[in-house]
Length: 287
Image 1 (cartoon, rainbow, N blue to C red):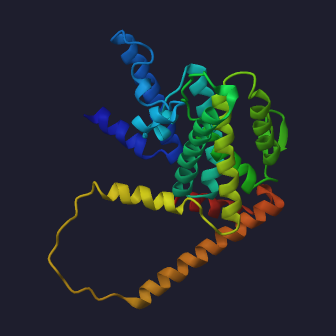
Image 2: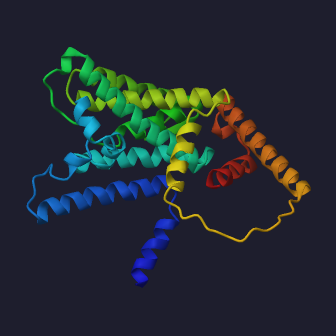
Image 3: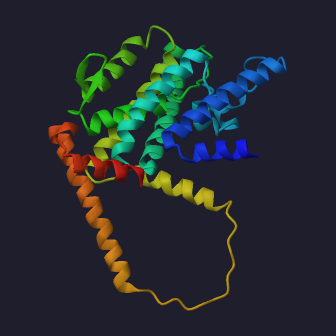
């Protein structure tokens, strides 16, 4: 029992990206073990969660527009995806909350899957090709391109060199475009769909518009359907208006300070921040 509690505690201390990494790895290991131990066909479980290329097949399993992103084709596939997710999320979560991360991640997966479906049913190049989509790459590309767009001049260390984020984002998109006719076309199309979502989300957020707010509200409403409403006796509640006003003012000031720091990063880079500003952003990202 103590081991179970320890695992539960360790998991609760992880940030949202680390939890997604654990879930992806757990799904990969569980699928591999079941296939091996029960002598199943390698596609026996995956076929219920992968995103099919046909619209009619997709309508039979609409959940696959999201679930496909939790399955991977092999060790190297999941290894490099999780590495990229880990490093991209470190920058993202230092600046934004878990809510924004999940919005970008899952909308990226949906956008990548949608572009895959459209492309494989519109372009003659893919007619007769029956290759369903799996992998978290589209969601991860959405996270990566989001930070590359929001902080284009931020420099990160890559081996021995400091490289601006927008160079990295442009390189990934260019590689997907170049490799499109060379193989794994569905995967590269999904990457581009995720990248497009990340780019648009970041641009709109810079304008003060959160395009993921509707998605966030929908998920919360769906979750509330499964929560039991607690009945309590009627009682009179006297609201402290002064306390509410002070709390609201404090939240507005907090957000203004975050926006000012993000604007400074966008113009001058992360290294231009003072230690106090970096600490403030780090704490804000944990909230």
